[in-house]
Length: 200
Image (tube, rainbow, N blue to C red; front, side):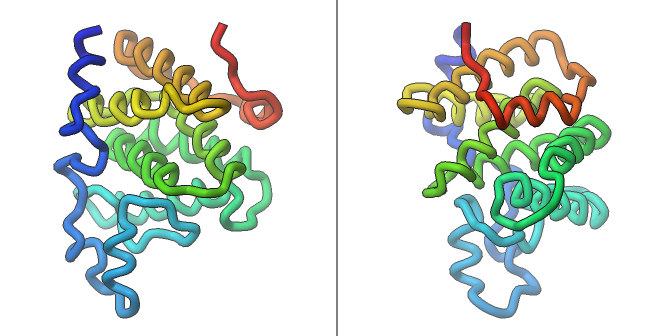
């Protein structure tokens, strides 16, 4: 568990991850509210981000990152969309198929869960995080940052702490075994929404 001790260090706060775009780059091409958008880069917002949070290598990856953000917002109930379970599945499939997007998915979820005052939205984002850590691990670069985020939340009372502990246990297993290559079925995703996972 020495890696958990190390991950507790505040230098592994997800906001300090070195691949995050600079504010200038993030708002390039945005005409209104530049400062507000830059300031909110790593906190909850109910609208789609202007660019990927991380420096991704290609325009195609950036476009996919925006699609993932739209799916996260749809699943969490920020944007009214039909069939939220298929949005969750889509996010997980993209992470499995496109290794370069894995950390982007995780950091978008960390962002969505930062300063989010809507319990329903928070619950759903945690469901996505639980599913994601059960499907693929973060990169070696982001591993300690994601562990740090989960450790920060394991003592939160109620559902959030429960989700965080469950995610932490799944992530630890994933780091040992590697990607499961297994995407939950629609029924399994719906079951997450009906009854949150409980640690035995």
